[in-house]
Image 1 (cartoon, rainbow, N blue to C red):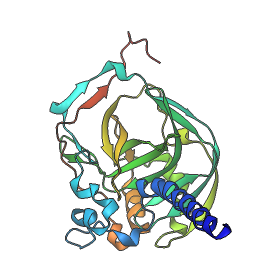
Image 2 (image 1 turned 180 degrees about the vertical axis):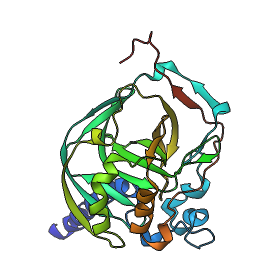
Image 3 (image 1 turned 135 degrees about the vertical axis):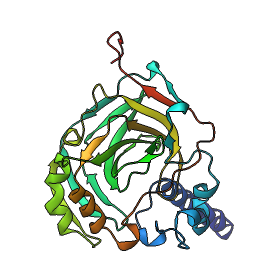
Length: 279
């Protein structure tokens, strides 16, 4: 009798283990890929943006998706939507590390650094990273750099705040990080930065912004990402842009994915007014 019971018990244990693995692998597959050796930004490369969707089955959205990012924020397609309301950012200081991922420079917070509220959903800030040139364009114009502030909700959905930069005065936050970025240039190392408040990067209150539904801009190009692009273009020095490009690997010195088709998506624009009562 005991022999008859062994097979079902073993099968159940195996089944639970498989279920555990699947549930724990799914979030990883939907998030950004950390290993830059699997993909490149070089045009014409077999691992370039036009081929990302062919490299792995779980990356197929990079080629076949209908809500891909980045996009061109063409003013003719923008609709003013006052109901979007002011950005509700609730950030605080937390420990952080700076990492060279090969394809970009990433600042990651190790503790609870706060969140933003979008339509009643709380998205916790996890990390930020830089692209140069910018990935999003405005009326076809590409800018010198773009910062992405990556947020995640409790149900594993994502929201990203994008900040565009043109050449001008140095960005104060990048100025503070220059020594550390130089220390990890052309490596795969990470160093502890210490306590950083996201408001050192940008204060969100009262900002005009674009909002649309898109995707991650690196494999696996997961869709359903809520994008918020700050309308005001900030400034960064030419030397800071050179530093960001010099620090990463050769295949990522220009680490911007090409603009993707809009496919009839709505681009909302929030512009605070004096009569607006939204917070």
